Amino acid sequence: MVVQLTKEEKEMLAGEHGDAKRMSMELLVKAAEAYNAERLIPIASCHLVLSFQKTALKAGLETAERFVKLGAKCVVPTSIDTSSMDFERWEEFRFPRDFMEDQFRMKKALEALGAIPTWSCVPYEGGGIVPRFGQHIAWTESSTAPYVNSLIGARTNRVGAYEDLASATTGRTPYYGLHLDENRLGNILIEVTTPLTPGDYNVFGSWVGEVVENKIPVITGIPEDVRPLDLRYFGASGAATGSLALYHMPGITAEFRTVEEAFGGKKIPQRVQFGPEELKRRTEKMSSVPGGKMDLVVIGCPHLTMEGLIDLANRIKGRKVKVETYVLTNKVCKDMATEMGVAQIIEDSGMKLNTGCCAWSPVELCGFPEHFTVMANAGKQAWYIPSLLTQMRPGKVDVIYGDVDACIDAACKGEA
Amino acid sequence: MKLKGHKINGGRVEGEAIVCNDAFSFLGDFDPTTGNCLIKSPELEGKSMIDKILVCPTGKGSSRGPLNTYRAMKLKKSPKAIVCIEAEPVLAAAAMVANMPMVDRLDKNPLEVIKTGDWVKVDGDDGIVEVIHSGNQSPFHQ
Image (cartoon, rainbow over all chains, first blue to last red; front, side, top):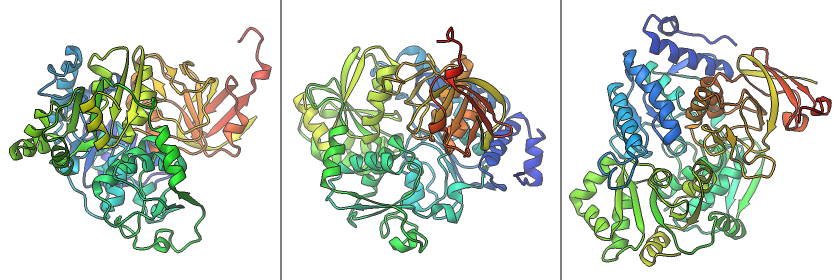
């Protein structure tokens, strides 16, 4: 299919608006062709993942600096995903110097492109953009896509790295997939028949990601008082084990009021149940070791925002941790938590606020022993840490999964 | 055997297939500095993916996957092409930024037709995948 381009888009493709826009437009047109998109559409905002992790950072940095040299700018409001380092406390947290230098170069490049320095996987609670219902956007980061698509009802595909930069600098995205009404309907029903604790949403999300693959689940049996925070963990976990980008919980998420509506009035093609047995079995799969001593505890993936930080401070007040513990958050929330005294309570316990950083970066970069164990409160980390990090560095990294309370208890006792 | 499918990314290459039966992520399942597969299975773990044709159902996981294929391309540790049942945006972007031809929606299930070690020709421009079984391969090519 030939992609229909506007006059301005044709000019961009022809290089009349500079090389950065030409390269960006070439990539977007390629993607549009691949997905049989008839045209590109304007987007209202963008979220970038260019900066991350040792090897990927180098790839992203090269492109970001090239775009800066070519005079590129973000033409729509664009937030930045987590960094791999706390820009203030990098030395205290033992981030290697060469890595620090690359990370600061990336910061400079993205600022020159005019991106908003949210450095967060929760940009919508960190000085970034909150899209509106039905708005077309191009957001990367596996955990933000399910959140903004499902809870807010904005429209984005799971945009990959580079395509995000292409969208930010042209203000366009291919019109396909989740931008279209007909592709947003559910095609698998998941009936939850067990009560879920807040932490269980990580487990449920990890299970859902594996079960649904590319499908859009319609989920029933979730209590009305579920917090967006819990659903953030759910989405992040499902987007790590699978490619969950949109789900419907009628009555809770934005788009559909009833199950019938969520399936477009059509017959439900597939039904599965998530009951006590599934919860038990998937919980057992979350950890690579059943328990024991750990070397590091990471809390906050996605980033803890005010709700999570206040909750954590209430739980940790007056206690002391025996294990190095990082609490991941973004800059805006850290500043507010500092003003409220919440940050002090957390730091007094011995936990450390690691700001703007991804939960797994310290695990990868901060000089832990060859074989060591991390405890995490996030399904996404429970999935990535043992699979990826064990291979990316010598030795072996084990992970123990537990909810926030379990992580606090383990950090204070020194074992789980 | 020739399979007809749909172009995701253009270009024509050939190489040895590496078949992964689960959805693939270039962040988590692949190390761009060594070009090795990281999937924990006896057939795949530690196996080189350099210049191979990745055959998988679809993509999954982190949107940072394309950063890793771009990096691997620069280090000459990248696979050569991707053949999948149905593409997914992040996997497609991973192919595009690293100049890997990519074809999906073939008239036969590539996971049933292609085995690891088979020689595969991928024509991304016309969306055609040709499979030459490893049974035909030279005894010296092992």
